[in-house]
Amino acid sequence: MVLTYIPTGQQIRFKGVDKPKKVKSQKFRHGYTKFIHYEECDEFNGLVEIRSVNQSLNRGGDGIITFYSYNPPASQNNWVNQAVAQAGTRKDTMVHSSDYLTVPKRWLGKGFLADAEQLKKDNPVAYNHEYLGEITGTGAEVFTNLNLREITDREIANFDRNYPGLDFGFAHDPLVYLDMYYDATHRRLFIYNELYKVGLGNRAAVQAIKALNPDNELIIADSAEPRTVYEFHDAGLNIKGMAKGKGFVEYSTKWLQDLRTIVIDPIRCPNTAREFSGYELDRDQSGNLISRFPDRDNHSIDAARYAMQPMQIRGVK
Image (cartoon, rainbow, N blue to C red):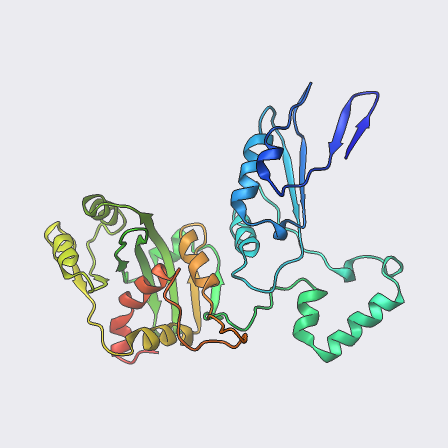
C-alpha cells in the first residue's frame, strides 16, 4: 500500500520484509527516504535483516530518522533486547519505554484495565512483562547479578591491579582477552577491556594483547593447548595456563554467579556484555531446565573464569 500526497508527490510506503531483498529495490523519482519505521521489529529474524534494508534506504540524504517499535520479549537473550542495550550506548540514539499507564484511561476501556489489575494480583511477573514491558527473564538466566554501564577512565585509574584472562580461539571460535579488576571487599568484578576476534593469528594476537596490557601483568589462560601457551610466552607475554580440575566449570561459574555484582562496560566490551547477559540454561523437550551450563557463546565467560581462579582457590568471596 502507498499513500501519496498529491501536491508534492511525497509518499508513505508500507512494505513487508518477509524477503529483505524486495525492499532493497526501492526507487524514488525525486528525493530519498526521510523516515523509516520498523513496526513489531522483534518479529524480524535479527539485525542482519534490518541492516540489509537500512543499507539500501539510508542513502541519498542527511538527517534520516529510523524508528523501531516493539514489545520487549521476556528473555534478555532475545536479539532485540541485546540490540537495544547496545543502541542505548550510542549518542545519536534515544531509547524510550512506555506502557499503558502513560496514556489516558479512556483509550483503553474498563475491560482492559480490569484484566491488567487482575493479572497484577495473580501473577506479578507476567504483569510486569505483558503490561509494563519489563524484561523479566525466563528463569533460565545464569547471571542475574549484571550491571551493564560505562566504567569511566577515573575508575580504571583507581584500580590497583589488573586480572587479565585469555580464552584461545580455535576454528570458528573467537580468541578472547579480558582486562578485569576484582574488588574483594565488596565482591564486585569489573570488566573494562576486551579483545574478541575470530581467525586472529598468534603473532597478531600477541601484539594486540601487549597493546592492552603494556605492563605485561600475569595472564591466566586456558591450559587445554599448552603449546599455544608456550608460544605466547616465548613471544614475550607473562602468561600461564590455568590448572583445571574435575568440576571446575561448574564451580567457577557458580563463583561468578555468587558475586554481588559483575560490572561490564558495554561500550568497551560489547561482546562480553552480550555473552554474559545472554547466557541461559537449556531446556529439555518438556521445557524443564537442564542443570548443566551450556558450552556455547561463553568465550568471555571462560576468560573471566580463568582469570579469577586465584581468587576462587583462596576462597575469596
